[in-house]
Length: 227
Image 1: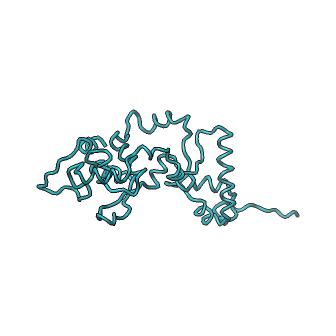
Image 2: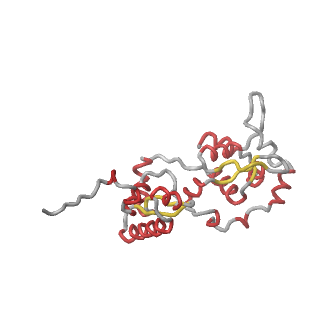
Image 3: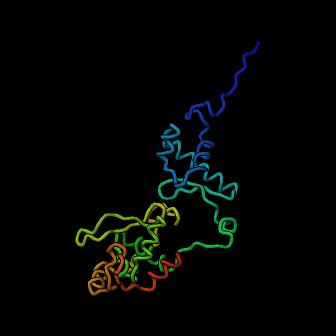
C-alpha cells in the first residue's frame, strides 16, 4: 500500500511556507500605500534581500509580458500602478467624463513647497505674490502637504510635502524632482518681499473668525470655489 501525501490548503500553511511571489502579489493587491521591503519581509518572515529580489523579478516579468499594470518602487515602497499606455482607458472608467484636477494656483503653490520645504505660508505667498491661505488648506486636506514644525525666528508654521505627494508624482524621493529650484527666488529675496508687505496679511494666522476683514487675492477665492 503506497503512502499518499497531500498538500495543506494555503490557509493552513504558515506564512513562511507560502510561495513567495504569489504571496507578494496578494499583499500588494490590497495595500493603500506603497509597502516597504522591510514591512513585507517582516510579514512574510523572509530576509529583506529575498523580498527585494522577488519584487524586482516580478516587475521585470510584468514588463516583459506587456501587462496593463506594472510594479513600481515609489516613495520608499512597492505598489501596483496602471501602465501609462492604458491610462486613458482607466480614466474613462474612473472619471466618467469628470475631472478633479488641481487648479493652476494649487500646482504653483505645491511646486514652491516642494522646492523650498520646509517653508511657511508667508514665504510661499511672497513667491507667488498673492494670498495662498485657501490653496494651502486645499493641499493640506488632500494630503499633499503637511505641517513640519515651526520657524524658530517667527514661530510661523512650516510645511513640507508628504509621501502621498511622492506617490502621486511617481517619485522615489525629493532628489528626483526636476532641477527647477535655481529659477525660484533666493531666501533673502523672499524675506525682503515679505518684510515689504507682499502680501498685506498674516498668512500664518488661523482661519478668519467672524467679523474679521482680510483682503484676499483672487487665487484664494478661486481655490476655495474650484477645488
